[in-house]
Image (cartoon, rainbow over all chains, first blue to last red; front, side, top):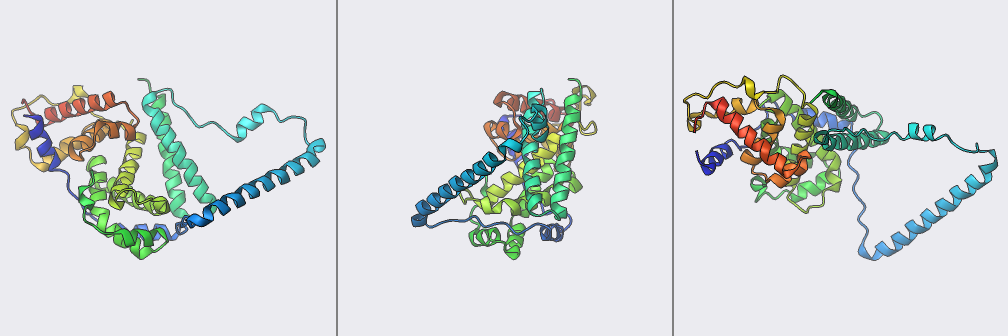
Length: 150
Length: 181
């Protein structure tokens, strides 16, 4: 069979399919638990420069404030924080040795962090929790896969 | 890659949904669920229950990500890619599922039935028996019409690996269907 004929037959399988049950009610319920999407702020072009200056000024003020507080508290602070403590607080994302799995690991890790951030904004969201649980389950499955020989 | 959404004017609903209008999002759901679910269903190996879960997840994620949609492509295309990504993440995570795996050694001998005689259900059943990654490449390339570059990017594999997976998947499929041609 020619490549053309093969593809012609395979493309016939590409067709829309309505789910056997109505998923909207479940989605609607899940969206109840999720905060409405934030509309990104879109400043008018004339305001962009002023906003940037304000942001820069705010950032500079914050840095000075934090710097001042740190400077005042410096004598009371411990001389140094053990490196191990720092690494405990910010664990490196898991990187499998198998390059076939690294893409999935990065993506799942990013998804997990994104969901955790979303849950900080909306801690009671059952839908977000469900997505997070599933993502972490997928990470576990990937780790098991990485441990398997071959 | 996005012929289904051509001609559909959903711009107003997309903007309204991005601003939090649930009814607008419901209209978008009904407009696009067929295409999204069809692709997810094929990638999930024609497993209805799993495909429904993934479709549901895809629409929830779409709702969350909608404010970031920049209208650089059709909404249908953006949603379709997001849904495919959700399905691929699930496939990658289930890569070791022994139930879904199919070893070349366990394939039936090639019979006399030509590929063209296979009924659609038979073809779908055979595709569902392919190993998940090989099935994903076959579905994306041969059915959905993706290029190997795009498949490689989505699945995190080299272009040559995608081609090799497709070759293997086609071979397995032909043998499953008993094709001698």
